[in-house]
Length: 110
Length: 110
DNA sequence: CTCTTCAGAAACCGATCGGTTACACGTAAA
DNA sequence: TTTACGTGTAACCGATCGGTTTCTGAAGAG
Image: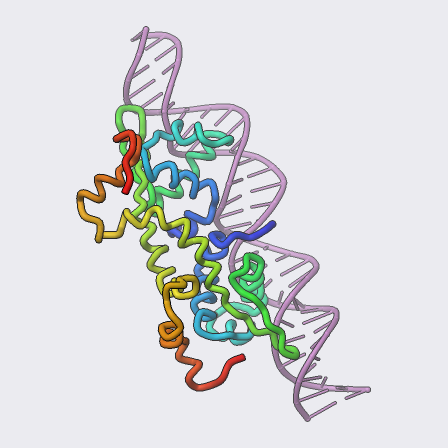
């Protein structure tokens, strides 16, 4: 089934792979050098990342270079956007009040 | 094992539960009313969300109200922060160049 | 041509996931 | 006190996950 970005980043190993690919292209062996697990295991993670578009592969001869497509993480950022208010301390008290859930207008709260 | 926030939001049902709890408190039955699955299934999802701190429970008599703690999503936002450049179109070409991976230039920084 | 390297696939395994039904316990209502 | 409600847990199930070892095919090196 089709992968989604949220499932892709759920695994810490895959997040680390993305961190590596944010600043460089690497082959599978290049990625595997940073981890203490087998190459097929890394290959599986990269496949998952590829399936949801977070990584693309450029083949050069027998080597396949993984390119991070971190722009795809915008999907996660978009989902988070409405909740930035919960930790964004730049909002002042008035703005916080204005953003209060509309359900509060009909009834009181603890 | 201890849950982490990334694993918690990997599941679309749990993301929907969080969306509901962003603007209101609901009991388990209140949450379940929005879904087409059994209550124990919803209960399991809420347990996962509680284990990683995304939801807290306030008990009032026999009813247990779920409170979203969306501030906890800051962990995801923090992880995403370095990659905002990949979709943040406000950066112009020069700034993009300056942010190029340090492997290309030795280093430079704003 | 042969050998080496790169890396995907297959098979396997234990663990976990995400749903179900049935049951049990604590609290509220009658 | 009894009944009803709210909801967590147990047991179950099929599917998936995340790792391993082994095998295989394609491409590069000698």
